[in-house]
Image 1 (cartoon, rainbow, N blue to C red):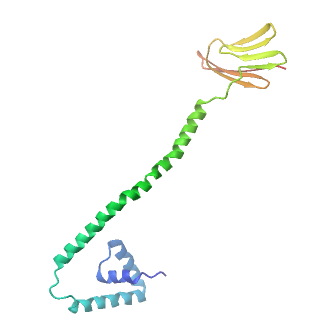
Image 2: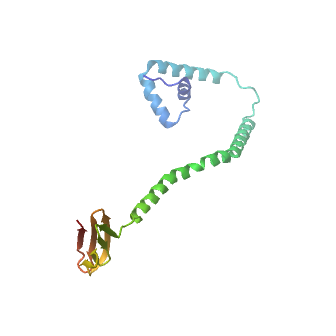
Image 3: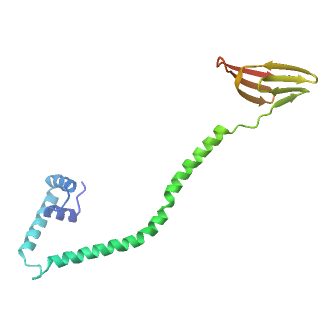
Length: 184
């Protein structure tokens, strides 16, 4: 069992704790005999001090309160002089947090918009295969064979080592046609 510090018990005995701390300590004191005795001791000392004339005669509480307020204001003003330097040191943290997000967004945009260079034609022993906007063309010498897709709207071309693969989207029907032409 963890016991509260004497300072907390003294504040509890004087009724000077906040609501949550007072409730928590009251629960502990009800269950713990040692802490209950310590709270009673602090309460006795508190009563004894009130009975003594320990305070100097003629003490001006208003003047003492005014001096305390002035010292607090002076400390706050001194803290404001130091605070801008601390804030300047911490100003880089939002930028350091935003930088990885910016890098991720930029990388995503580049990966979406960048396409690898397309080899428009593939040559295989004198045979040339080329992807065009209207179809795939296979040429060998003077002869040519063309696979036409006249209603294509979205054309995607992919070249590989053995041929050309083309994806066409028909503008009228929305159907996708994929043609893979390769030479042997």
